[in-house]
Length: 442
Image (cartoon, rainbow, N blue to C red; front, side, top):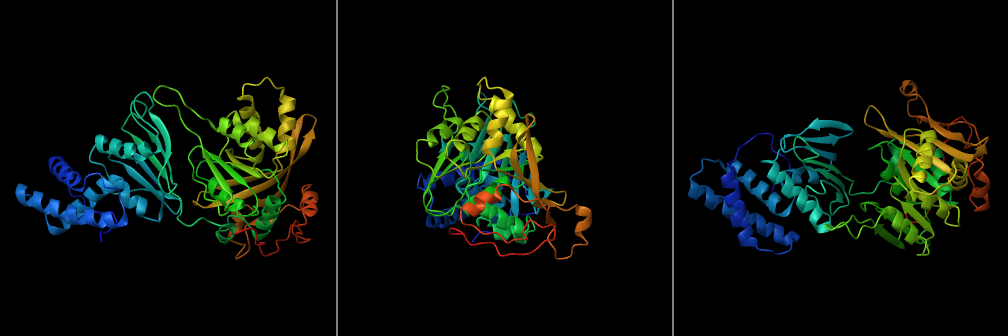
């Protein structure tokens, strides 16, 4: 069994020696598909090849150095080269490769430089190709950027020269092997029990919910957690650029966009998928992220009988979320008056959940706001829950850092019509603790 922890000691192996070992190992294993059993066979073969080559070349390496060379060679053949141990390390949430010699990782919200490095730019490019090729994606000088995913669903973005000046850039946002539930997020103080109870009721009552936040704030994680409250008897369609949502229900159709091929043909955009989804008899439509003209199609779907839709977008506040939606709707190329766009947004969106990554690395919901309509041409919002100032948190003890604003949402009527009862004082400013209702298969 190979040690998966990256070695802190730097041992420089001659590139010619590495290549000779790699060539001989690839020749011996052929094109056999990888299985767990086969991996153990490859490790044994790699040990033999490394021993033989080192003996033939009379290279002065210790037994510990040989083990490192075996591990790195196996990772190169079956895994993703030097970053394979980082991918296997569950404490790491993000891997950021800034060229072949600088690899950063994120642990517990903090970014640090790892001791991992690639041999050269060529090896880094080989790893990128190995990630994107099985997905039918391509990356070259004519198309130097790509979004992809690993087999476990982790999100991948790569940029190569000439766009990346100091060498290829590879960013991998890993996802926990265990999908986080709303209860987990409550345990992390990402939201309070009352907020969870309210959001669960909103999802069950088919509220249209937008999750808004910055990069790395946890939007997709929260979206997946909220989806657990969708009843198991409903047909769910998920639409994403790179499929990463892992839902617990059985009746799920997963759709993924496709970039153009080398001739520039065959592209299928998020907007195309949203349009097509309306013909697939969905009960719920979940769009991983809206960032363009598909926003208009999603709003129209919400306004024409497809309630209960969920999506995310990049914005810093609920008000910014509305402004971005307005801008992205204009990107659809339709000559629609601004007032008509705002009316569509006000009619379609019920709840905006604002999530943020704080200075200490924690991810928390900082606001839950309700869209209540239009007033003098402006979309009006009312905040239902909010996060207390961080300065007060040390004085709260075990109490949740979130509180209700005291305002009762207008959507409460729809919640009650759906036969869902909420605790009578859930919207009072004094925090009370109530159990999160079990819904679906959470």
